[in-house]
Length: 225
Image 1 (cartoon, rainbow, N blue to C red):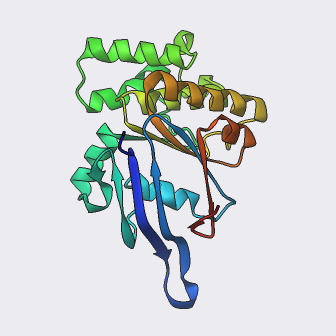
Image 2: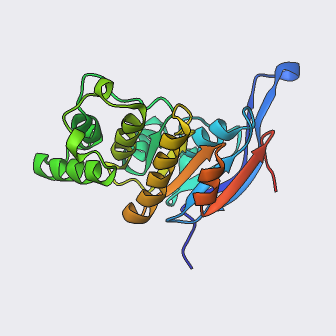
């Protein structure tokens, strides 16, 4: 039996104190199997982003543990967290986060440069990923010369560059129109299958929920149903 890629156990996170305390996460426990697309669903303020940040090591819980691919994220120091995000976990955000002065190819290749991947291997991987997201002909264009949907596709390609085990996407279609959003969601479904990556995607969109292997619902910091 395959071990879960993600194990979340008893995770709680509170911001503020006393009467002003906000309980973003309350004793959250679940597993995610490898090679699956999981939709994390909940209204604004339900704890989705906090949960993603804790799993990816961008935030620390007040209680509980998180393991990703056998690594206890909640026990890592800053160097360990940097290594985790370089080698095992990648992010896709609403705002794309591309470097404006770099071309699409240079943006996708940036994580490989940080990992000191040899140039020939890096260029091959960049070409493969841009083709995968349907932007092979746009490799030399900068973000400002691309549509929002194209920029998000570049961001997805960049997130896949270093072959992460876990892809975390926080409302990746939030700034896109409905049709473009659907194409990006279908792309995420495709990369889970073609790259063998596990994806955890927060979303409000019923199309993404329909494409997901599993839906996790969160309400007021607790798993719901």
